[in-house]
Length: 195
Image 1 (cartoon, helix red, strand yellow):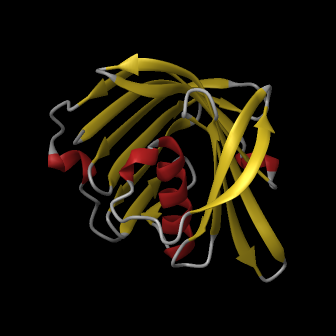
Image 2: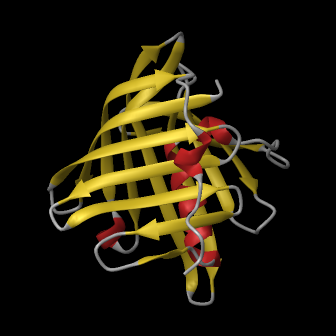
């Protein structure tokens, strides 16, 4: 798959739901737009650089923003990994909801630890936990994958829940439309000139 387009809704931690559209292009480009009452909130990632635009700001991403955007993009499009994971090892079993899972773990080049929990019966990814070491301790990001459906012969989760220590950033993305290999104009991923 070279591209994926997802449409649906983003449900905030307070329960409010807003229209959402996400576009991915291999290997490392994505756009995300959420239609909020105060105006659209959008972000673009194009390789190692990105852009944020919302009612409060319109600016290039800094290093922390890019890392957070890449992690978010990875949570929504797990298939975007272009490099093999280093030393992926078996870490036991655990329950995710009522499902038994096999857990694999690794440490990324930037030091983050990642755990993947795969359903023992279906083999589908049910949970991904990324742990970032910070000066004040471990900052976990948990992503749960639900409601897998077949799209062009590929099982795609249609509900993705992401939770953080800071509950302000928690969200659930529910997709009603998923398309693969749609022609996407490169201009869609172009970043504005720095202001």
